[in-house]
Image 1 (tube, rainbow, N blue to C red):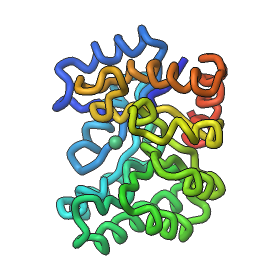
Image 2 (cartoon, protein in one colour):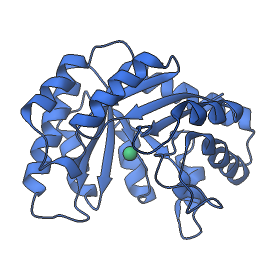
Image 3 (tube, helix red, strand yellow):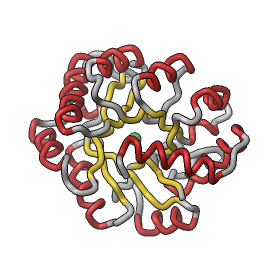
Image 4 (tube, rainbow, N blue to C red):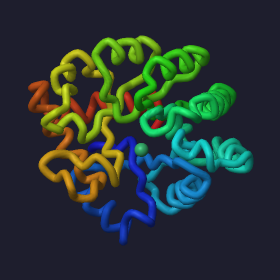
Length: 249
Ligand code: NI
C-alpha cells in the first residue's frame, strides 16, 4: 500500500475527485495527504479530509501567495491545526524563482508558520525553489521542527544537510524526467525518502503533458525500485515507516 504524501486534490482541477481516488485505489495508492496553499484551498482541504476517510490534510500559505494572504488566513490555520486529520503545516517555504522583490515578506511568512509548527508540535511541508541557503538557514532557527522537503531536486550535499536536520525528502515524477540528476543520487538518499505526486503538476514520464493524479505514485515507485534494485514491498514498507515518523499516520 502506498501513500501520495503531497497532492492538491481541489475541485478546480478535477471533474470528479471520487473517480481520481478510485483509480488510485486500483493502483495500490490508498492514502492521500492534501496540501493547502492559500486561504481558499485551506478551507477546501479541511472540508475534504472530513468527507474522505483516507484523506489527510496540511494547512499552509505557499510563498507564491505571500502578497494575497491575510491575518485571518493564519488564524484559520492556527484554529484548525489540532483538528482531526490535520497532520501538518504545508506547503510553506521560499520561492525566489519569479519574484525576488518580496523575499523579506516571504521569509516573514515562512517564520510565522514555522513558529506555529514549533508551538503545536506539527511537522512542516517545505517548498523551496531557488532559495536553498535561505531555506536551510531559516529552518535551523527552529531545531525542534522537522518534516519533509517537498519535491526534492537539489544536490546530494544539500540532501545530506536536510537529512542531518531531521527532514525526509519528498520524491515525485521529477525523478523520472530524462534531464533529472535525481536518479544518480537515489542510492545515497535512500531510505530517507517518501513518495508524492504534487498532482495536478509534475506528471511522471511517459505521461508528461497529461494531468497528474495520485495513481501515478505506482509509476514513480516502479522507477525507483528498478533504480535501487529493491522490491515494491520494500519501498512501500520504508516509505510508510517514514510517513509514520513524520506525520504520525
Ligand atoms: Ni504542491
